[in-house]
Amino acid sequence: MNSMFSSTIAAVSTPRGRGGIAVIRISGDDAISVADKFVRGRAPLADAEVRRANMYKIVDGEGNVLDEALVTVFRAPNSYTGEDTVEISCHGSDVLCAEILELAFSSGAVPAGPGEFTRRAFSAGKLTLTEAESVIELIDAKSRAALALSRKNLDGALSDETDAIYKKLRAALGSVYAGIDFPDEDLETLDDSGMAQEITDAISMLSRLVSSYKTGHAVIEGVPTVICGKPNVGKSTMLNTLLMRERAIVTDIPGTTRDVVSETAVIGDVLLNIRDTAGIRESGDEIERIGILKSVGQIEECELVIGMFDASRPCDGDDERVISLLCDAKESGRDVIAVLNKCDLPQKFDEARLSSLGGAVHIVASDKSSRDVISKKIGEIFFAGGASSLDGAIVTNARQHASVTRSLNLCKSALSALKTLGADIAGSEIERAMAELSEMDGRQVGIDVVNEIFGKFCVGK
Image (cartoon, rainbow, N blue to C red; front, side, top):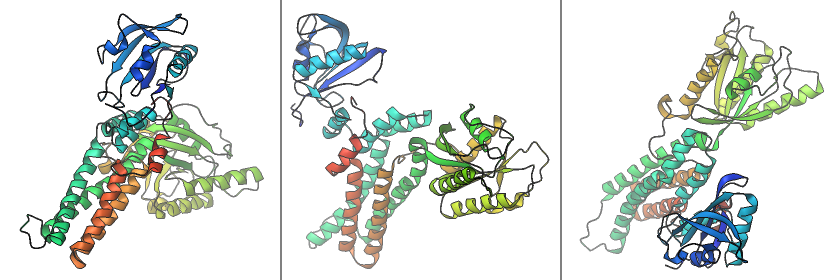
């Protein structure tokens, strides 16, 4: 089987740095003959049993043994890339890996580009585009939930769902064109009612995919989150509790935090990109005023706002300003969690002031249990039904979300056209909806989109 790529590529597929083992991958039509020039064993690599690791010696051009390594041969099309592939598992020295790579290059291979192995797998039909994206998500997973979701999409959950939608639209479109091109033939086609049902089913499935992005985004990409409030309400203590370590300085002196402190934390199954901000209040201190302006800017840019209030103090003008900012954020579509802190002290804060925000959760920020309270509330926001669930197909990135959203809108337009303008106009909208799905999953996709996706990969994957 000849590859569509003319070159044979090589790269280290494991992270750089000293380790027990490193894996060097060589892929392409000449992979076996390239490796055979510096890999020595009882028999040539061309005669090796495929998919079985055997011990070989790695020798340089002068016959010096550089290492003993486990070498595995994969024959096309039964390899990751769909091409002939040789994987060399050697000792994990940077110097040794560089020596072996140089031997591969001098034997006819060329350096692999970022994500080129996976790109070849996509080109060979081994992976859809969404499955290829799940590879990098699997590599970058920062939580068990991210790992599980990436693994599920790599196994084809999202691709299977888009396939099912595509088939429904194809059935509707086939009936449209059969009626237009062969009006006098007695063909088995869907009537308008049947076509409407297929489109309606597609709309329902697409709507669920569009909605799933909130969960997928929160698990895979992470939610930009701001902790805000007036000074000394416990914002930095809350950050430390969420991170489960002392990250921010905590004192009884108001205004300790004067700049944005950024960290990442996995809360339940959700990845939060958290920013602790300066306390919001009227201030004559120029440095503090700059920090407060940054705080307001962060609130305007984030997706989730955790607004904190001191239960032991009456609501004052600074609190009202924070409430106003939270209301604005909520009205603009961002998620807001109002938090009453220091609830172990006598409550003086009028909680009714927070009714426009849907009420507040009660915590003691210094208590570890407050992390569970916040985690539960976050789960209610980002998981349907208030429980962490990764059931069904889930959209995980903005590119996928944009495609399914456009496809959904075109399907709605097709259904409307079918009822008012006729099947031929509806057919045009269905074609466009199918094209969006095709681009999302790689059936029909521009080279610039492919380059952008695989450019995010590291070299060696």
